[in-house]
Image 1 (cartoon, one colour):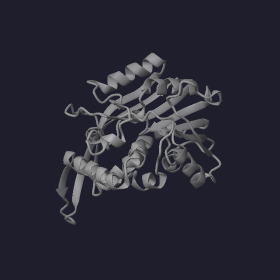
Image 2 (cartoon, one colour):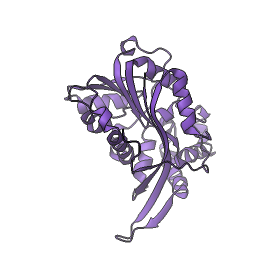
Image 3 (cartoon, helix red, strand yellow):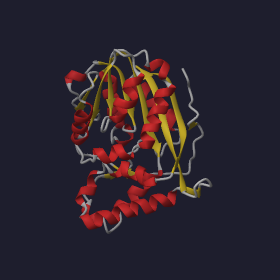
Length: 301
Protein backbone atom coordinates (compact mmCIF):
# COMPACT_ATOMS: atom_id res chain seq x y z
CA UNK A 1 0.00 0.00 0.00
CA UNK A 2 1.25 3.47 -0.89
CA UNK A 3 0.91 5.47 2.31
CA UNK A 4 1.55 9.09 1.35
CA UNK A 5 1.06 11.11 -1.79
CA UNK A 6 3.34 13.96 -2.80
CA UNK A 7 0.27 16.22 -2.84
CA UNK A 8 -0.35 15.77 0.89
CA UNK A 9 1.80 16.67 3.88
CA UNK A 10 1.40 15.26 7.38
CA UNK A 11 2.21 18.31 9.52
CA UNK A 12 -0.78 19.76 11.39
CA UNK A 13 -1.22 23.51 11.94
CA UNK A 14 -3.00 24.46 15.16
CA UNK A 15 -3.88 28.05 14.38
CA UNK A 16 -7.37 27.63 12.89
CA UNK A 17 -10.46 27.26 15.08
CA UNK A 18 -13.39 27.10 12.71
CA UNK A 19 -17.16 27.14 12.84
CA UNK A 20 -19.78 26.49 10.21
CA UNK A 21 -23.47 25.67 9.85
CA UNK A 22 -25.44 22.47 10.15
CA UNK A 23 -27.59 21.50 7.19
CA UNK A 24 -30.38 19.87 9.19
CA UNK A 25 -32.97 19.34 6.47
CA UNK A 26 -33.48 15.99 4.77
CA UNK A 27 -32.82 17.60 1.41
CA UNK A 28 -31.22 20.84 0.27
CA UNK A 29 -31.38 23.21 -2.66
CA UNK A 30 -28.44 22.79 -4.98
CA UNK A 31 -27.00 23.81 -8.33
CA UNK A 32 -25.43 20.74 -9.97
CA UNK A 33 -24.09 22.45 -13.13
CA UNK A 34 -22.47 25.19 -11.06
CA UNK A 35 -20.85 22.61 -8.78
CA UNK A 36 -19.53 20.58 -11.72
CA UNK A 37 -17.98 23.68 -13.26
CA UNK A 38 -16.25 24.71 -10.04
CA UNK A 39 -15.14 21.55 -8.19
CA UNK A 40 -11.59 21.38 -9.58
CA UNK A 41 -9.96 20.97 -6.16
CA UNK A 42 -12.43 18.32 -5.04
CA UNK A 43 -11.72 16.34 -8.21
CA UNK A 44 -7.98 16.74 -7.70
CA UNK A 45 -8.13 15.45 -4.13
CA UNK A 46 -10.32 12.51 -5.11
CA UNK A 47 -7.98 11.55 -7.95
CA UNK A 48 -4.95 11.77 -5.65
CA UNK A 49 -6.49 9.49 -3.01
CA UNK A 50 -7.73 7.03 -5.64
CA UNK A 51 -4.22 6.91 -7.12
CA UNK A 52 -2.69 6.34 -3.69
CA UNK A 53 -4.87 3.29 -3.05
CA UNK A 54 -4.98 2.09 -6.66
CA UNK A 55 -3.47 -1.33 -5.90
CA UNK A 56 -6.32 -2.12 -3.50
CA UNK A 57 -9.09 -0.57 -5.57
CA UNK A 58 -8.38 -2.34 -8.85
CA UNK A 59 -9.07 -5.65 -7.07
CA UNK A 60 -12.60 -4.58 -6.08
CA UNK A 61 -15.03 -6.38 -8.39
CA UNK A 62 -18.23 -6.33 -6.34
CA UNK A 63 -20.89 -3.80 -5.38
CA UNK A 64 -19.79 -0.32 -4.28
CA UNK A 65 -21.35 2.92 -3.04
CA UNK A 66 -20.14 6.52 -3.28
CA UNK A 67 -21.66 8.57 -0.44
CA UNK A 68 -22.17 12.26 -1.13
CA UNK A 69 -21.69 11.77 -4.86
CA UNK A 70 -23.18 15.17 -5.70
CA UNK A 71 -23.65 15.51 -9.48
CA UNK A 72 -21.90 12.18 -10.11
CA UNK A 73 -18.90 13.42 -12.06
CA UNK A 74 -16.29 12.13 -9.61
CA UNK A 75 -18.13 8.81 -9.27
CA UNK A 76 -18.17 8.35 -13.05
CA UNK A 77 -14.88 9.94 -14.09
CA UNK A 78 -12.54 9.01 -11.24
CA UNK A 79 -13.86 6.25 -8.97
CA UNK A 80 -15.46 3.82 -11.44
CA UNK A 81 -12.45 3.64 -13.82
CA UNK A 82 -10.19 2.78 -10.86
CA UNK A 83 -12.15 -0.37 -9.99
CA UNK A 84 -12.12 -3.87 -11.46
CA UNK A 85 -14.09 -4.01 -14.76
CA UNK A 86 -16.74 -6.19 -13.08
CA UNK A 87 -17.45 -3.69 -10.30
CA UNK A 88 -20.74 -1.81 -10.08
CA UNK A 89 -21.32 1.36 -8.09
CA UNK A 90 -24.25 3.39 -6.83
CA UNK A 91 -23.78 7.06 -6.06
CA UNK A 92 -25.92 8.44 -3.22
CA UNK A 93 -26.57 11.98 -2.06
CA UNK A 94 -28.99 13.82 0.21
CA UNK A 95 -29.87 16.22 -2.62
CA UNK A 96 -32.64 15.19 -5.00
CA UNK A 97 -31.42 17.84 -7.46
CA UNK A 98 -27.94 16.33 -7.54
CA UNK A 99 -29.27 12.80 -8.05
CA UNK A 100 -31.61 13.89 -10.85
CA UNK A 101 -28.67 15.57 -12.59
CA UNK A 102 -26.43 12.52 -12.11
CA UNK A 103 -29.05 10.11 -13.45
CA UNK A 104 -29.66 12.26 -16.51
CA UNK A 105 -25.98 12.82 -17.23
CA UNK A 106 -24.62 9.31 -16.62
CA UNK A 107 -27.65 7.10 -17.30
CA UNK A 108 -25.83 5.38 -20.17
CA UNK A 109 -23.35 3.79 -17.79
CA UNK A 110 -24.46 0.20 -17.10
CA UNK A 111 -22.20 -0.15 -14.07
CA UNK A 112 -23.45 3.05 -12.46
CA UNK A 113 -26.69 4.08 -10.75
CA UNK A 114 -27.75 6.85 -8.37
CA UNK A 115 -30.17 7.18 -5.45
CA UNK A 116 -31.16 9.70 -2.78
CA UNK A 117 -29.85 8.80 0.68
CA UNK A 118 -29.23 10.76 3.88
CA UNK A 119 -26.24 8.91 5.33
CA UNK A 120 -27.14 10.19 8.81
CA UNK A 121 -30.57 8.55 8.83
CA UNK A 122 -31.61 6.49 11.85
CA UNK A 123 -33.77 4.37 9.53
CA UNK A 124 -31.34 2.92 7.02
CA UNK A 125 -33.19 1.35 4.05
CA UNK A 126 -33.19 -2.44 4.34
CA UNK A 127 -32.10 -2.73 0.70
CA UNK A 128 -28.70 -1.29 1.64
CA UNK A 129 -27.89 -3.31 4.76
CA UNK A 130 -24.92 -5.70 4.26
CA UNK A 131 -25.06 -5.06 0.51
CA UNK A 132 -21.70 -3.49 -0.35
CA UNK A 133 -18.15 -4.72 -0.79
CA UNK A 134 -16.68 -1.22 -0.72
CA UNK A 135 -17.90 2.27 0.19
CA UNK A 136 -16.33 5.60 -0.80
CA UNK A 137 -16.98 9.10 0.47
CA UNK A 138 -14.99 12.14 -0.66
CA UNK A 139 -15.62 15.71 0.53
CA UNK A 140 -19.00 14.87 2.08
CA UNK A 141 -18.90 13.51 5.63
CA UNK A 142 -17.59 16.73 7.19
CA UNK A 143 -20.99 18.28 6.43
CA UNK A 144 -22.69 15.73 8.70
CA UNK A 145 -24.06 16.94 12.02
CA UNK A 146 -23.91 13.33 13.30
CA UNK A 147 -20.81 11.78 11.76
CA UNK A 148 -20.90 8.87 14.22
CA UNK A 149 -24.30 7.83 12.87
CA UNK A 150 -22.94 8.20 9.35
CA UNK A 151 -20.07 5.81 10.06
CA UNK A 152 -22.44 3.41 11.83
CA UNK A 153 -24.56 3.31 8.69
CA UNK A 154 -21.51 2.74 6.52
CA UNK A 155 -20.52 -0.17 8.76
CA UNK A 156 -24.03 -1.66 8.51
CA UNK A 157 -24.07 -1.34 4.73
CA UNK A 158 -20.77 -3.18 4.29
CA UNK A 159 -20.61 -6.93 3.89
CA UNK A 160 -18.22 -8.88 6.15
CA UNK A 161 -14.64 -7.93 5.20
CA UNK A 162 -16.00 -5.05 3.14
CA UNK A 163 -13.81 -1.95 2.96
CA UNK A 164 -14.25 1.81 3.21
CA UNK A 165 -12.16 4.68 1.80
CA UNK A 166 -13.12 8.17 2.99
CA UNK A 167 -11.76 11.69 2.67
CA UNK A 168 -13.00 14.14 5.33
CA UNK A 169 -12.07 17.82 5.50
CA UNK A 170 -11.07 18.61 9.08
CA UNK A 171 -10.11 22.29 8.85
CA UNK A 172 -10.72 24.96 6.22
CA UNK A 173 -10.88 28.77 6.45
CA UNK A 174 -14.22 28.84 4.61
CA UNK A 175 -15.95 27.54 7.76
CA UNK A 176 -15.15 30.61 9.83
CA UNK A 177 -15.98 32.88 6.89
CA UNK A 178 -19.48 31.40 6.52
CA UNK A 179 -20.08 31.45 10.27
CA UNK A 180 -19.17 35.12 10.57
CA UNK A 181 -21.14 36.17 7.50
CA UNK A 182 -24.43 34.50 8.43
CA UNK A 183 -24.32 36.38 11.75
CA UNK A 184 -24.05 39.71 9.93
CA UNK A 185 -27.13 41.85 10.69
CA UNK A 186 -27.72 42.35 6.97
CA UNK A 187 -28.28 38.62 6.38
CA UNK A 188 -29.16 37.08 9.75
CA UNK A 189 -32.93 37.86 9.56
CA UNK A 190 -33.24 35.77 6.41
CA UNK A 191 -31.43 32.74 7.78
CA UNK A 192 -32.48 32.83 11.43
CA UNK A 193 -33.95 29.33 11.23
CA UNK A 194 -30.64 27.76 10.22
CA UNK A 195 -29.20 25.77 13.09
CA UNK A 196 -25.71 27.16 13.73
CA UNK A 197 -23.30 24.72 15.32
CA UNK A 198 -19.72 23.43 15.02
CA UNK A 199 -20.56 20.94 12.30
CA UNK A 200 -17.16 19.93 10.97
CA UNK A 201 -16.55 17.16 13.46
CA UNK A 202 -12.77 17.40 13.87
CA UNK A 203 -12.25 21.15 13.55
CA UNK A 204 -11.50 21.72 17.24
CA UNK A 205 -9.71 18.43 17.79
CA UNK A 206 -6.18 18.48 19.19
CA UNK A 207 -5.47 15.18 17.43
CA UNK A 208 -7.99 14.57 14.60
CA UNK A 209 -6.20 11.43 13.44
CA UNK A 210 -6.44 9.78 16.85
CA UNK A 211 -10.04 10.92 17.28
CA UNK A 212 -11.13 9.43 13.95
CA UNK A 213 -9.30 6.18 14.68
CA UNK A 214 -11.04 5.96 18.05
CA UNK A 215 -14.45 6.54 16.50
CA UNK A 216 -13.95 3.92 13.79
CA UNK A 217 -12.62 1.33 16.27
CA UNK A 218 -15.58 1.97 18.59
CA UNK A 219 -17.97 1.20 15.75
CA UNK A 220 -16.08 -1.99 14.86
CA UNK A 221 -13.83 -1.08 11.94
CA UNK A 222 -10.36 -2.54 11.51
CA UNK A 223 -8.16 0.33 10.37
CA UNK A 224 -5.61 -0.27 7.61
CA UNK A 225 -4.70 3.38 7.19
CA UNK A 226 -5.63 6.69 8.82
CA UNK A 227 -3.75 9.97 8.34
CA UNK A 228 -4.19 13.71 8.82
CA UNK A 229 -2.60 15.85 6.13
CA UNK A 230 -2.03 19.39 4.97
CA UNK A 231 -3.21 20.09 1.44
CA UNK A 232 -1.84 22.87 -0.74
CA UNK A 233 -3.51 24.16 -3.90
CA UNK A 234 -2.40 27.07 -6.05
CA UNK A 235 -5.51 28.70 -7.51
CA UNK A 236 -5.68 31.55 -9.99
CA UNK A 237 -9.46 31.68 -9.59
CA UNK A 238 -10.76 31.50 -6.03
CA UNK A 239 -14.27 32.14 -7.40
CA UNK A 240 -14.39 28.52 -8.60
CA UNK A 241 -13.90 27.18 -5.09
CA UNK A 242 -16.42 29.59 -3.60
CA UNK A 243 -18.94 28.63 -6.26
CA UNK A 244 -18.54 24.96 -5.34
CA UNK A 245 -19.43 25.80 -1.73
CA UNK A 246 -22.24 28.25 -2.48
CA UNK A 247 -23.78 25.76 -4.92
CA UNK A 248 -25.33 23.72 -2.12
CA UNK A 249 -25.86 26.11 0.83
CA UNK A 250 -29.64 25.90 1.21
CA UNK A 251 -30.19 29.11 3.16
CA UNK A 252 -28.99 31.32 0.28
CA UNK A 253 -32.39 30.84 -1.36
CA UNK A 254 -33.99 32.64 1.61
CA UNK A 255 -32.03 35.83 0.95
CA UNK A 256 -33.60 38.42 -1.42
CA UNK A 257 -31.87 38.67 -4.79
CA UNK A 258 -30.23 42.05 -4.19
CA UNK A 259 -28.98 41.01 -0.76
CA UNK A 260 -27.91 37.61 -2.08
CA UNK A 261 -25.32 39.20 -4.35
CA UNK A 262 -24.03 41.30 -1.46
CA UNK A 263 -23.83 38.15 0.67
CA UNK A 264 -21.77 36.35 -1.98
CA UNK A 265 -19.42 39.33 -2.33
CA UNK A 266 -18.98 39.46 1.45
CA UNK A 267 -18.13 35.75 1.53
CA UNK A 268 -15.60 36.31 -1.26
CA UNK A 269 -14.03 39.33 0.45
CA UNK A 270 -13.64 37.59 3.81
CA UNK A 271 -12.34 34.40 2.24
CA UNK A 272 -9.75 36.34 0.22
CA UNK A 273 -8.51 37.91 3.46
CA UNK A 274 -7.72 34.44 4.83
CA UNK A 275 -5.63 33.44 1.80
CA UNK A 276 -1.99 33.97 0.88
CA UNK A 277 -1.68 35.55 -2.57
CA UNK A 278 1.20 36.53 -4.86
CA UNK A 279 1.89 37.53 -8.46
CA UNK A 280 2.97 34.74 -10.80
CA UNK A 281 6.09 35.85 -12.67
CA UNK A 282 5.20 34.10 -15.93
CA UNK A 283 1.98 36.04 -16.58
CA UNK A 284 1.67 38.49 -13.66
CA UNK A 285 -1.61 36.88 -12.59
CA UNK A 286 -2.59 36.81 -8.92
CA UNK A 287 -2.30 33.28 -7.52
CA UNK A 288 -3.82 32.18 -4.22
CA UNK A 289 -2.29 29.54 -1.95
CA UNK A 290 -5.19 27.49 -0.57
CA UNK A 291 -4.18 25.54 2.56
CA UNK A 292 -6.43 23.20 4.54
CA UNK A 293 -6.46 19.81 6.29
CA UNK A 294 -7.83 16.40 5.32
CA UNK A 295 -8.37 13.10 7.08
CA UNK A 296 -7.93 9.97 4.93
CA UNK A 297 -9.07 6.57 6.21
CA UNK A 298 -9.07 3.08 4.68
CA UNK A 299 -10.80 0.56 6.95
CA UNK A 300 -12.43 -2.86 6.92
CA UNK A 301 -15.54 -4.37 8.51
